[in-house]
Amino acid sequence: MAEFVQVARLADLPDPSHHLFEVDDRVVVLAHLGGQLYCIDDICTHDGGPLSDGGIDGLEIACPRHGAKFDLRTGKALTMPATEDTLAHEVKVEEGLVYIRLNDPDAPRPAVPTPVVSTAGTTGMPATPESTFGTNEVVNDGVAKSSPSSAAEAESTNRELSEDRVREELKKVIDPELFVNIVDLGLIYNVDLVPHESGKIDVKIDMTMTSPMCPAGPQMIANSKQVLAAIDQVGNVEVKIVLDPPWTPDKMTDDARDQLGIF
Ligand code: FES
Image 1 (cartoon, rainbow, N blue to C red):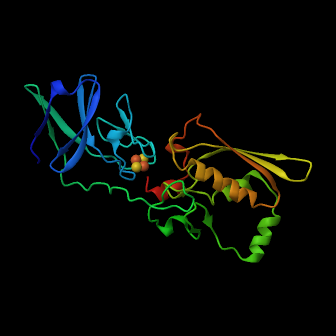
Image 2: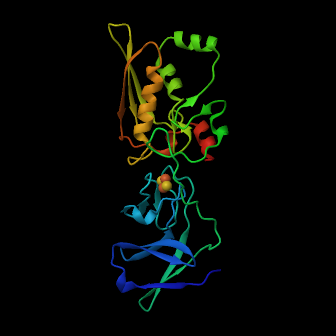
Image 3: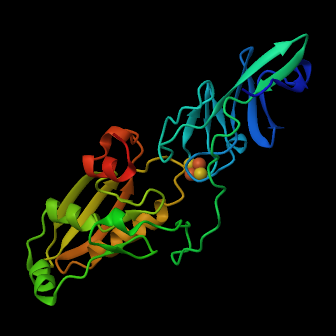
């Protein structure tokens, strides 16, 4: 087991405040809140975001990159897109000095993110597992492309427009952070079809995000409009972002949970 390492004087850590320390080559964030000290790894398990740069609300710290929240007491991942806990460490105070002991100094650290160029220019997509999308091929604009025969394409074009069909089409839109389609993630709250005189049907969608700070939002909105506008019967497409009720993981389908390895 690792030894306790002295990192600071308690008097130098105002309450509330949080600080970065390097302990045995591991970077940790130490928070002083409500008279208590908490210490967790400084790396978000989603894609390596620096937790110490994020905001603290109560006993939760939010990753500044995509908004995943972690419990400062336990390191538990509380919200998507993080699905793995980060490591919490022991803290003690003796004679006014603060000590940290790493809980598992040899635990693997999440990879520090590498910048990835997205053709859509909004957010990066890490190297991607093709198997996530079944038979669909995923291109890095966040839209899954299947390769239907021309007969199947024609049949699809002539099909009546319904809410089910809209949701089916929206499954082509992939969340570029989670690599799961936005319908199975539970991001589509409502679909309205409004026929108008021209014979076309306007589509109005209420869409939410896995977190209010999700940087992939503009890309997913644009991709949703793109796949729906490609349907012959569709007139205007309106996508409204709705954050109430907030998205929670229980809105995901079993397929999405399988793809994310959540059981
Ligand atoms: S890197 Fe932290 S939520 Fe994505």
